[in-house]
Length: 382
Length: 223
Image (tube, each protein chain N blue to C red):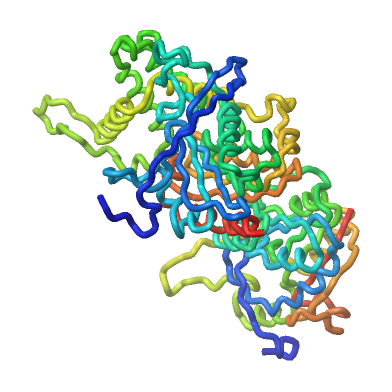
């Protein structure tokens, strides 16, 4: 592909930065050095006031928008990031870094240990949301940005936005929290635990040492992804997309062949595709980070008290059919923000797509983002 | 067009539920703005496209927050730089702390809420003062229209010929007498009231015989 749509940032290349300053993780273990891979779009203005940080979700990465050389599939948020789009790269300088502990380029379980002896594998220290925020802050320093015009993220990314607002209250003017929560519910943790058990129960997982042994726990990782993917869709969407359509076989009398539904075939495909591209140790680590996050744990479990520390103005958005990060979770967040005296706007988008709606073209979501980003842009000019 | 509407262009604005409501130019709001102290924290229930909050921010330097359920209105408010929260008033105001606002305003929405009494109590829980405006459905023209066999005041015409029934919202018409009675019974102190004619002006007739001659009424109240 040589021609990009006019509203795409077009050809992009990831950048890489090595950090030699040791990073003290929340778990008390020190990471002596680390790499961050990131992408930037648009241009930083002279006042350095138009930078927006995007925090990515569980299994996505720094490739937010545009196309890599020789690839036809754009970044994961191409719908909303580009020239003239909601996150307008003509107005904003947009940055997204791959989180450590992942497997898309930044230091994680597949990286070599500092002594070069072997990959970290299961020895990679547990990472929490605040560790990612601290890494992003290091990158911010390197890029010469003193204050973000906005920090934005959905799902696990939204948790990073919230943590940013408490860890570095002066370093951001706006926080945009999409389809997220202040902490996971027991049901939500349970889904993650089933996914983790699927991975660790795979004989090829070999206690996480599969890279050295050359045995990939793809079956377990695929099942883990199938469970996750299922929870990102709504019942209505699945009825619409698959219903009871058959992929193969028939229910005719006298037919003894196996019958497979479309939804089975779809989930298997999603699971297999994911298992080929993602690291099992990373998946364990990332889902744990998601489970551990609890915004107000160190604020007497009082989110209102937590948000009193924040200074940013917030936009919170939820999607009606999202049962993994339900609108009720966002309403709780808004209530705490209001109680703490923060400026906040909230929209509950009626969309059938479930949790993944934030990735898909939803006209009202687009309108809400565009409306809010006008004030972000106005603040960046001043 | 009757004498008391002459000279005022009619404007149609969408209420929260999207029901078009013909209203005269927003001169009625002039009165309301004067009740709001400078720099006040204001909550606007059913803030529509945010025009009142914008005025209050410009003229009274308030910190405003609007509650709204109409998606287009919410987008308007966001574009205008207002603070707006999507919220159905029928779910109450439980997400707001006691006395978190100086003034809670509700314009032209009272007739559409499911539990107006609870909402008025809630207004005075979360705010020091309440301001409510509504159309007086006992205005002589409503009575006359009804006498002539016209539709019930405030009700939408039934789409009997098009065959398409739009979503109907229950409207509970309010009158001056209703509201005065409510204030007496619930120990609500009326701090100020404006009785306006259809042009949004305080006319002698509306002031002296509000039950019959006030088209639109505004109440400023507290506990």
